[in-house]
Amino acid sequence: MSKWWLPRIWAAGLLLLITFSHPLWFGGPANIDSVLTAPLFSYPANSAKWSTWLTTITILVACASVLFGSRYSRTMWWVITASLVFSFLLNQHRLQPWAYQSAIYAAVFASMSVAQAKRWLVMIAASIYLYSGIGKIDFQFVHTVGQDFLNAVWFPGIGRFADQFDAPTMVRLAYALPISEALVAIALLIPWSRRTAGLCAIGMHLSLLAILGPWNLDHSAGVLCWNVLLVAQAWFLFVCPSLELEADSEKMAPEGETQRPHPVASRFSMAIVIVAVVMPLGERFGYWDHWTSWALYSPHTSRVEIEIHESAIDRLPVEIVPFLSDVDGDHWNKLDLSRWSISHLNVPIYPQSRYQLTIANRLANQFELRDAIRVFVKGVSDRRTGRREVQSLLGQRAINERFRQNASRRLSETMACHPRVLFRQKPLNVIGVLANPTTNFKTR
Image 1: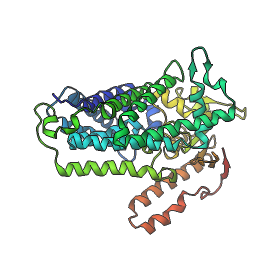
Image 2: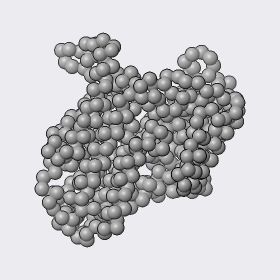
Image 3: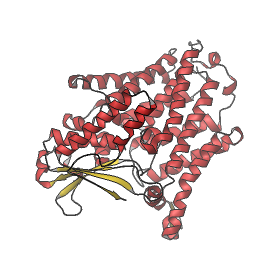
């Protein structure tokens, strides 16, 4: 039996996370799936259902095989890696942070010795905390989500933490949250401080569980399960790595599986890790997605607000109607994408304007909303001021045109191989290239 427990614990965690978010992985009502599913490539509609089921079942079987000590655990981890990547291609909403992290970890578990794997896993884990922390050192976090976190803190005999301070002090205290997370990340990279930093990481996740649990902010079960899994990771990877680092891959392989990792496979996994660690640097510039850049609990992300006119509500499925609300009495009902996603898929909405514009495009076309739909495409907020570039699109035609432009730009940038070609493609990202009926303005 393997003496290294982290791979098995991770397999068990992935099983639970997929179970908690099963509508995302197995599909829900057809009229809802057709709107919320956004593949990264085109494929026949009649193959979507069986492809989704087959891929998900493959992941679950492979995880169970690893969990129960299969002699082919390395092979099973490669199966998990490939199946997760294929799942992301079928539906980019499945690029949940824990799923993306699991795909990277699976490649590491599949191809490296224990000592080598731990070195690279430390790098990945530290980069997650570092990017997550730095991403929240901005205006939006300290004035919104950071305040929500602090307002949720309560001490016996004292009461709410937020009641003890004035508003400016609360903003300064909110900055302490991401700065602390970034400092933990740096300490994890230093061998002599790694154990202490690991204990701090455990404390951080336990605090998040207290804040995000059903007794407080009531976040989804998947978010809570992921934090529990990260507590286990911190313990086995940082706090108590014991003597496993000195063990070679043959001694530490699962029972019956004694082959050493292939050097080519190890290099391939190293390349995956390097990409995952480096590419988040381009997140604020639109070159890497927010969640794959570990923008966790970060409100600076790009997004799309969708509003449906009250005259067209009867064209929508009844499952969508509860998530519409006319807050300002102008007869336009805002669709709460976050609540809709959590209610139907048990996961937060994918925080990317590209994906959310796809939802708007599907709604407009599938239910023939014509001029009864309008959207506001919001860019990444400014780190210092919180202001965003916003583009308004009125009607089905304008939404379709913007959607086609996005698709055309992605195809052009994929095919372009020369840096100067990529540079020439960049102006297409600038807000304001569409003809009327669109308007552009800045807002918070």
